[in-house]
Amino acid sequence: AQESRGLGDVYKRQLPDGFAAHLFASEPEVVQPIAFCLDDRGRVWVAEGNQYPRRAEGDEGRDRIIVLEDTDGDHRYDKKTVFADNLNLVSGIEIGFGGVWVGAAPYLMFIPDRNGDDQADGPPEILLDGWDYKRDTHETLNTFTWGPDGWLYGCHGVFCPSHVGKPGTPMNERQRVDAAVWRYHPISRSFEVFAEGTSNPWGVRLSTETCISASKIEF
Image: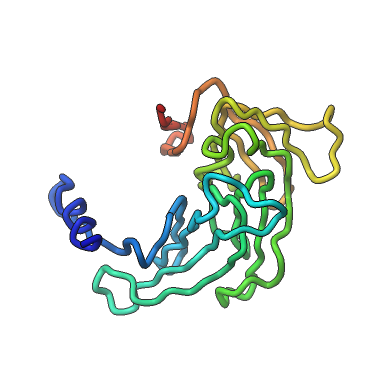
């Protein structure tokens, strides 16, 4: 029943001539998908947000990252790999620079996989902390995407201002983030607010002119 409902939603889409939509994966094979990205092999990396909307005590939760692959070219996945589990309140992922970049408030993390075997080389590395999750868990860091300038871009909603910095950074040296588009450089490890003044951005697109447009969710 869930499969047919998913197929119906796909076939109702209106697409330009020459395009087609296919149901690649659906529940219950994929549970609570909250974010995804694509790698250079055409595979889909999905964050399953089982822990949402409440963060578990401590740093371990019920979220995980899976890799879905279509090995026979029929437009539906037939291979699933669990890349990481026991994550807590994941809200954004992107792949690149030898691993997976994960947003899981209060952290921006990097899970290394430098040999590309789809198995984490070690525990997540905490790059930044201070992302607020206590006031609102669905408006924190999200929508990771690489910019043409080599920076990792993401969004942050309103009503849950964060004070972000490397672990151990004093409060007066942290970057305030609220209703904004931010970016992080994977090599220099620099972090900054790129634009602010929106409401609840959950989606970002970069044009050929390197302009940013952010979509928002209204409640």
